[in-house]
Amino acid sequence: MTPLHVVILAAGQGRRMRSRLPKVLHLLAGRPLLSHVIDAANALGGARVHVVHGYGGGIVREAMAGADVEWVEQSEQLGTGHALSLAMPGIPDGSIVLVLYGDVPLVNSGTLHETTTLAAGTGIALITTVVDDPSGYGRIVRDSNGNVRAIVEERDVDEEQRAIAEINTGILAAEAGRLRNWLQGLSRDNAQGEYYLTDVVARAVKEGLSVRTVPPEASEEVLGVNDRVQLAALERFHQRRVAETLMREGASLADPARLDVRGRVQTGSDVFVDVNVVFEGDVELGDRVSIGPGCVIRDTVIERDTEVRAHCVIEGAHIGVGCQIGPFARLRQDTRLSREVRIGNFVETKNATVGVGSKASHLAYIGDSRVGSDVNVGAGVVTCNYDGANKHTTVIGDNAFIGSGVMLVAPVTVHAGATIGAGSAIGKDAPPDALTLTRSTQRTVANWKRPRKG
Ligand code: UD1
Ligand code: MG
Image (cartoon, rainbow, N blue to C red):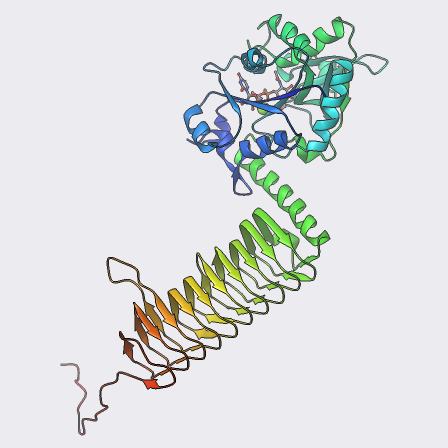
């Protein structure tokens, strides 16, 4: 197979974003635009990826740390042709070069594959599309037989060319040796005084090559981000596509326009997701899981038949089969719930395992805790895990009953079957199958007069 080199042009500042952040680091679906493009390049399989950076290059490289790419610096932005030529020394003749833009994040790898395959056959291929309003884009000039002759930039068109609706998306593929020659001959003799990559098309035609064009599957694939309005539009397009995939995989969405996925969601069948839910990172939903409105769920596995009610915030958790969570529950990092656990409103958990059938229905904090099965944690119970310097563990045995308002001062163990009286502060281990409580005697002051305002 012909080796493939992908060159991502990303040296522009993106002034219209009005941002200190380089444009390619603005987020789409929670990830920088550039990482979407790198993913698309990697999806082609076995490609070497080169990124041409300029403005804010240090920040860009840092943000992409870990990406397997060659970095090429373009210190002065002299045009797309110049940018590509800087990457060419790292690319051997005979390979196919595919040019992508760092600010065109939703490119489809099927369309890209078709483009590189055509280029391997004929020498050069481009993705072009017909639009209602071609202003701002390079126009595709064809002869009377429909063969591509050249690309003319907006600022260099004549009146006739201005009306051409077929535009250059900027994505092109060509054989490296030929491309190298064409690039060497580019001139800056144009309205912008730049080296235009697009001029290689006329040179290919001059050499008698037939320039092939590929349409995108959907026009949004080739849309670029120039300002925040376009960024938001692409975000919506992307979210719509993700929502459709989830629905096809078996999730019902109350409103596909009111779900945001910033990461990956794997769904079982007959899942229901209500409105205004955000999924982040890697989320797995088992069969028949139901997610209530307004939940934010990050890096979490939820097993089958579990119901998460309205307005829960869940991250780094593993929730077992048939649990009931919320409304208004907060499950934090390393919460592991077994089967049929109930975590109710205003309950917070962190680094906690909870056994089968246990319940904390209202207003509790369970942190750094090992809770057994069939435990009842009353309203207002707090595991006091932090002494101001260190975190300590609370252990609660099977079938224990913790009354309302109990402070469990860790490190502490409540043994199996123990009952803790409401309002107790428990700092020593509580024995099994007995009632333990700390409570001062109740007294009444008769004839007591409430203070009055003076
Ligand atoms: C370019 C194409 C135009 C096409 C349009 C599609 C050229 C000459 N024109 O125009 O035909 O219709 O894209 O959006 O190629 N970049 C660099 N270094 C540079 C200049 C640009 O890395 O010196 C990068 C930019 O960061 C950007 C991409 O190349 O990612 C395109 O540059 P831009 O200035 O937006 O080109 P357009 O004028 O839009
Ligand atoms: Mg542009």
